[in-house]
Image (cartoon, rainbow, N blue to C red; front, side):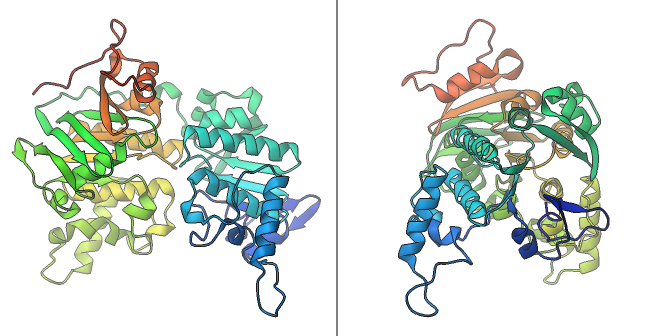
Length: 469
């Protein structure tokens, strides 16, 4: 993407747009040639309106010199949206929009620039199912209108559904290219990771120990209501639910980001008083956040600093840090996670998504956390990196760690978790033994509001009461 956008220059090869060979030394040249990017991390000015974002850098001039006509800008943006059948208010602030609408603004920006090639990177990674379906309709419509689209996604069912042709990369090399009609998901996975889909989720026979985390009556202001859960040593417990069900809010309450209003939290039989993330870290609780770039990493700090931030006492903080000791500890922690970096002093922003995720995991392993919360740990990373995360989770469980694994992807919950807890509207509505249930039952509990006790499963489906102590 960055080579096509003119951010990086190629060492070899050529780029042709239409019948013209192009050489881009900066992003402006790529835009002028008709290539427009929509990155996974949306590039919008949130404090500006929809119209101001669409026309950023090309604002209609006002009646007086050096002024902008906001009225004409809004009118042109509204006409532009109608032309492409987008229902969006040009006067709305971007910060007030849903993520799906922000994607639409990015697309309108690209179309306003008269893009002939549109490159979308993981466009559904932060969208709900409904927003994703809306985006698919937009992509199909733009294709019919003659745009060339490059659609990058780790959600392989989207690739099969949307693409005409599929190109598969592994370790920077093109390993396969074929019409989508000739491919299926197991074949794509095999090319991407060099192994069959049946080997994707590692087998684990970890012996479950006593209850490590014991939670009763947990509630918090952002929408968690009376949650009970137990996680044993050596156990991976999945947490499922639709967008807005309260999964991340449970994690934030357990980690002290959000203040709990009621409830009791015990770790290894000891009741905890957690008023802040610092308290949680001191008690051996770790949170790998849903959005690693905004709430996990300090992107413009070195990788070594990102690993050692909550672990300063281990590197001799008295009161000065010893750089040589810090670098050695960070290097050892990174090696354990197989982080690919030029050095521990490289900026965290220079790493790929998968390596950034491994950097965060290395942080919490160095902190010797006993209870780990992984919130969407495989979002926005490639299939090979996902497989590495799954193997790491298994290894941590075998070492006796207790893990709460939050995910929107049912296949990975069924592939990695021993039990699956289901949330709806801030409440826990199901506690299922993974081997004895089905994805359909999980979705039923997550989506169907009966207004009463969760429905009983069919015989053998595996609805379970909380694991006893």
